[in-house]
Length: 375
Image (cartoon, rainbow, N blue to C red; front, top):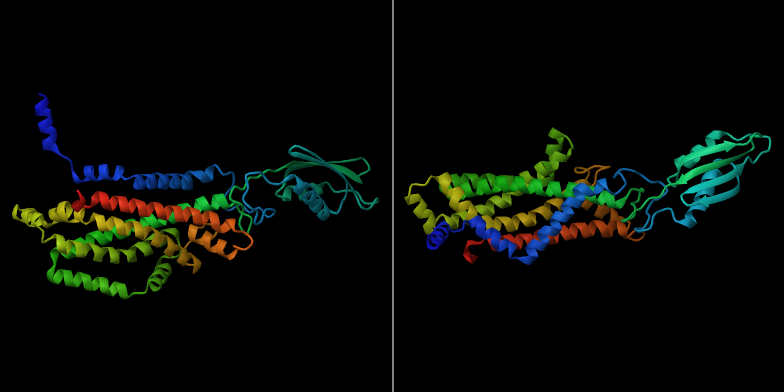
């Protein structure tokens, strides 16, 4: 009985995908990079719900605030900020009492003949440091007591040049960069692999015509192609990965075609043809699986390339528009403010660099796992 089970297991064997999965899981660098990339992806898609800030909320009192674990405002900032607010309200400050997260201020009118207006409490509510303001005016109307809550905010990555939370914007920008990079790469992969494998396997005049079409598309300037798409379809998010993916498949097609030309002369392809397999079956079962090694390597290089292209288009005003952002746009903005606000460049760069390293290590691991020569 045991011998029969062993023979059945030996006869069943392992498929290419089972063998690739085992080899990939044995690669520690690839597995670590895959886990890190998953963590970054989850942080970008789930993290903004827990930061406590909206990506487009502007805190005008916290422009270019450095990254810190301590909540703002600091204790030494409360009284100067309060005096500045009340100065605009044109009242005299008699006493300021700070109790934990609440503040109580006694004010009086600068003119003894002029009564205070209860609307001066709105000056506190307009500030990012205070909220829930209330006022109690005495019977004479020349003095009053103001009460308000001190609004505490944490900016773990600091704020940008307009006072928006950089952590939230970095995570939201990661959504845009990752989605555009992956979707554009998927479009390029689908079109390029199918087109290149078909052209290389059919050969002859069909191959010549299909490759001349690729040469013609190569001659079209990328920016001109994007501008034409913007004119016809308008400026939107979906246009980004369509425009990039519709151009980047050309290199993929050439790579797959070259691999197919060498593979179709191999004995296993000739054996499949002799057994009566159709061209579609040979492409699906023999040609395309054996080209996955170079394709995966190019795909992992294409994702960062697409992210950089998206940043370039956004810089020209053809890509992501405010208030949305991407890692490339944040890095560009951080580079312009590097002298006074280095954190604006550091944090988006860390996310982008880590993602690129992870993609490269995953690509190396997949190449080793899918290369039939190393099996």
